[in-house]
Length: 349
Image: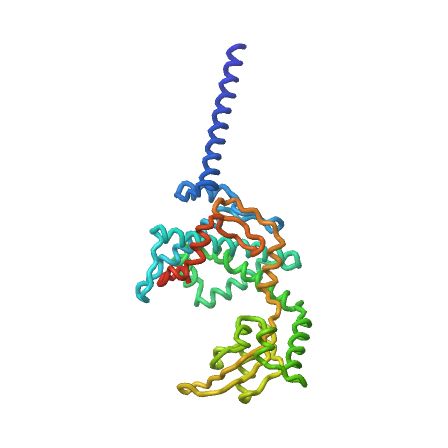
């Protein structure tokens, strides 16, 4: 009997030691992933096996650490596989500054993954689903654009280290959901308020009161041109939105158009002057612009409604902007100044 107890005691001791070792190992992994951001091959292997959550969007699902690290590796491979020296540009992620630029890229990747998850959730809320057949058809369309399947697979492997399945899941499906959601938004868009506003502004400059165009633009127009009284300067037709270009090139100098609708909004156009420069017809125009609600604006407002938990120590959720940002103020400053401080680095642009 004492021997039996001793044997059971040893078994429980072994089980306890093994459980303790597993617990310590998991704790080691968790600290490495969430506190120290270790990114060596060992940790990369375990994050592929264990779906450590990086972010959780309440209602839309989870983004894993592996998803982010996988896309990090793909974007790094893309830039390093190009020969930018031929066009006088350079890229080097090995320096301290290069590592910071990679973190900025990672933040952009995280925000895109968040957006894709929320778009998919919003689409499903509205009864939009993608069948295997529709996704396969869209994938085939993409393959045709590359000439054939072998060409696409070769480019994906060379540029990103992706398979065709990676391309389908990371690019094709998210774009399909986004397109479906944008179409639904456009079909249900009510622009009656914007239309009424632009008609009122047109009556002020073209009606009995004949108010000054620049003054009305400065006080009421949307967009940066309002600061200059609606001035847009000189443009060729191919530099303008098609609806605007078609209209102003049919006008006479000094003429003011009735409201013109485009995908962006409503435009009251004033043709200041015409000229031909090096054989190219040019127009000098001003506008009073009333912006339409856009899909991007609407999506941002929808994203603000989601509660997002970020488990990675270097990031936090900014609910006001509906995006992930760096938790370190110094990194936010670095990102803000990046374009001015990284001339000639193609990864920045």
